[in-house]
Image 1 (cartoon, each protein chain N blue to C red):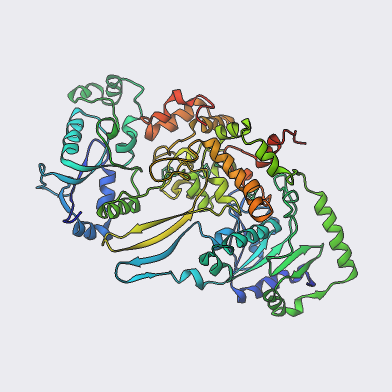
Image 2 (image 1 turned 180 degrees about the horizontal axis):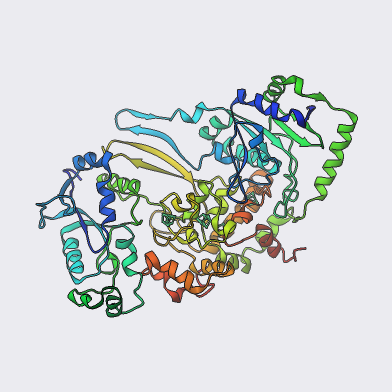
Length: 342
Length: 260
Ligand code: SF4
Ligand code: SF4
Ligand code: SF4
Ligand code: SF4
């Protein structure tokens, strides 16, 4: 992997060059304490210290709501051109964000290919940026605190410079377009990078043992924990909306008044919704909220492991940060393990 | 439906805001008129047919007076499908806000001695009196939901309206959470979506104008609002404003930890 450095005084100029690769999106402030990925004009708008945005990067490639195609009786259907047109450069993706996208790639580019997701994803450049974890981050436990694929460039703060890992040929093109801003790695850069890496590793405050969790979940299938969480949960859907790896969607048609045309749409779905497992004839496989809460955890920490060899949770802490009733995934797992949280 | 469906649009006691939404569908009104046979719409046209059988009747407002009840029952007899339009028709709305007091008391407080001139009964939604085939809530209703409903009905189908909470739309649009960030009394977690979280989009908490979402977890909402320092009466007043008649919002159901 090609590795170079970018002095911080060159950062703004580098961001200026990026617009020739697409519209730049990076974390900006929204509300009192929240951040969102949104279009930026220049580097000064970017919140480099943002720990987590409200929505993860899935919003760019797997839209909250989208028209899959427009249809008209007798004429057939067409896919809106918006799906394939636009190029974007996402700057400031953290390791867990990129792991989240890698997991969505496994799902949407696996047995059943999701062309909408892939069309948008193939038009995007991803530039990663490392971060300092807060109390809610547990990506070290999910092994997503470091990333080595899924980005075009990845910037690590090593003091007055960024160490830049080049992940793809597109990343290399972005560097070449501003070649004079970059430098070869020096000995002091290597030392700084290794020192920072240890500092970052030691700054995690939340750890949880996940390796043996699938077995424990099977053993605790009837645990009182699910009942308790079911009583607290509002089924409000927030945790799934904000989760980088919740990928369920619901497909429906919207009709026009002319009786022959309309649109097929899809929107994010959530297994905590009352009608998620409702089938024709009126039977609901998960009529109780406690069983739906259990499903969300089982899918992330148990089912996904069987299918893909790892949990789909990337430890970003969004579900806890955004849950109106304060349900904390780390607490739930700790209780299931009958352990006390330190 | 082979020939154009016969439609009636009526209002009971209320502000008629939902009928106004229908009239405000300026771009689509001609399509609606073209695709249906509007037999009666007293708010918008005179000379309607008040006796013919109807395929679909849309009704807004609350049953507040004995004559509302009579009219509603008569419309039910005439119509194949009866659609409740607006939070008043679906949940009782603002007229049902003070149902915990007796009618006589409320009348005296609001109208003084002139209150004796008219009769009222306890305000209730349409479903307390007749079978309702479809409910489109909202104060007022969302134009898009109405148009979707009409388009689906023209296809002989019922529309698929959201049955998840306002929070879901709030997060899909990536608005910061007012409950978490500012400690506001937000009813988004228990209110049915469809407004695209309009109030949070302006930095205002949801006041529940669309009525409760199916299986709303009121006890958990009350617990978390109490933790934020709101009193039971703050919470009860807010819950009652639009959907006081909804069973799930009655004080008895606010006991903690009931409906997992
Ligand atoms: S965010 Fe919290 S309350 Fe809402 S559905 Fe998820 S766990 Fe339940
Ligand atoms: S389950 Fe929670 S912590 Fe895990 S990836 Fe999803 S939002 Fe992040
Ligand atoms: S602001 Fe209100 S509607 Fe939006 S997520 Fe928070 S509680 Fe839900
Ligand atoms: S956010 Fe709540 S109060 Fe505001 S329009 Fe929507 S349902 Fe009504």
